[in-house]
Length: 262
Image 1: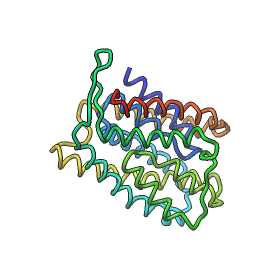
Image 2: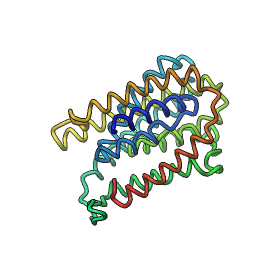
Image 3: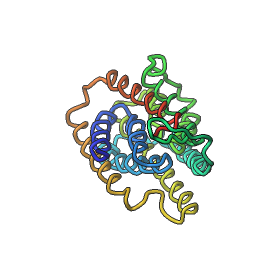
Image 4: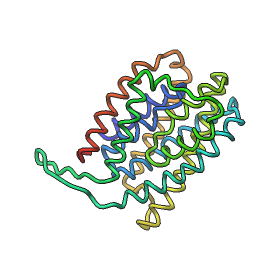
């Protein structure tokens, strides 16, 4: 069941998000959280997301606007390190409470509460029209990079903010897709390196265990297939329905995480 859920999420969302610039990490992190600890789910999502962005760069990276990459991507890359450091620090905090419901022990931890809050906020980006249509001026690009990168490092939720800032820059759709891919790859590179350094020093092992890699790799190849499928067939599909379904799913995950059930 885990392979079906992860691969289906990676395949479908990777294709759809090729043109929106966000959504893969938003969906995939909660999906991984069903089977992995939160900090491992974030790291696993980063691997799939990073590999998907490499593939996107190969296909559309030539259209990227490197002026935007410098103004937005460099601050995002640096702040992703800070977000990853915060994740590594909070992941080590002791549980706050636990209880039993229908023979299942639910454990509430600080990292679950933080992720629950962030997922809830980003669910609103999918559900509320005022946030769906949120856009920022070019002069705020460095600030947008800092915010997007920080949340990317902390929870993997970087694309919605990035798209909100890049949409108003006046670049062509091709440049928008290519720029998104390049900046996403930069952030993923920074946070994967930080996760490895932080979690390796804490555990004397990598952030993702040997038994977890097959599922991560399966999700990665499914994401590759999604990019190919999306580039060929899905460029005319509206994102409104997808955003509504995504938001509803995220609200459910946020409640489950906050209650310690995941």
